[in-house]
Image (tube, rainbow, N blue to C red; front, side, top):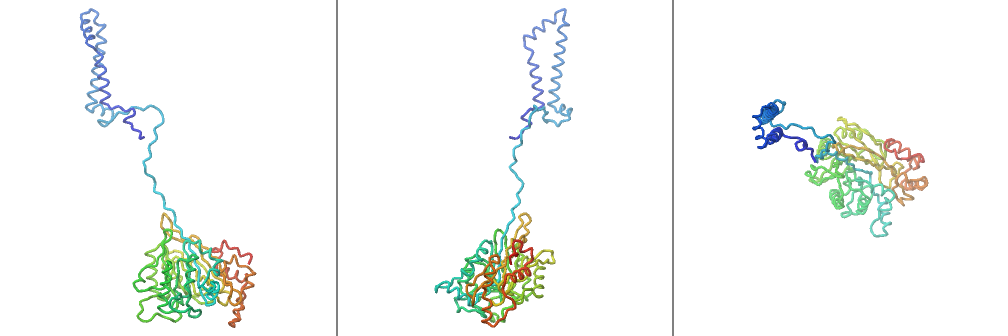
Length: 468
């Protein structure tokens, strides 16, 4: 309850004066007045004159106070505004507590976080889909045993990205492996099953099955309910940003490839893709992304194959993308795990650059082709400022394992890969089949050397390499 001084110990001045005057005037009854009048004839009239005179003075004073109060003069003498209440001290005691107003300070919105995981090339050689057919026992394809050791690492992300290196156009053309790939739809469905929801097809094999094959691949991935990019069906589509929204954070994606193995779309085709060298068009795509998203990821397929270091072209383009305000660069194509680093753009912002995450799966011939990376990071949007940045980064290396002539293919987290498995790796047997002589065996010390070369310690704080 509000404390109201006008209802607790306050008396208005006119009321106070009337109360005093009225009570005094009514004290003289008619009988008293008669007694006073008889007493005027007494010789000792002095004895009653004094009380009478005192009474008259009191009456005059009380009346004067009433007149002054009603006219405002009394208020003026007291230094008050006419009509203002005269405060009377309230009894001592605790002051009643004020009631809550019902209003509270606005609460700061909590931060939003997206846990993003990303892998490199899903490279489906013919040996891989033939083995998947064996696992299925003649009833389609079963790819699940190959990815089982790493599947849980994908499933616990909010958003998971993969580069589908080989085109999926089974509905139009026969399956095929290197050098013109066409993969079964079953492998794409299994990628969705284990948790991938963002797929890039912007790579050097995107035109292996021509324009119709490219369109069929887009159709297939869209039917799976995932975000697929790397080619646009028209020029008008290219003017729309590629967006995903997760946990209140909007991410824009900018896919590009450095090459298409000498292949191109037919003349008059409405379809489009973006080459890394198309600088002005690339800049426009980055600007479109920035205008519509909290966070921008560029996805370049670039660089040289089989090498562990980024080349000058990659470094130059990475800096250009950082200067334009890209937040994260997810590279691929080298089939090796290349360095991860921070770059600072001309505006002062930081860009995380992953030059290549290597192969997610594949049957290649060199030890460096067996080592890939699973990027695991947090994208955080500040609830108060709206600023969106990378707040945590880790890279978990992965190992492609096979035995004999590409049998028992598996993808392992490096934490589960043992010296015994490395000793059984079939790389040397497969190399002999193709007359390849590698300069290095796949051993745990070699794996450790590649990890230490490409992944700075700040990005592998929870990875213990001491046993390798």
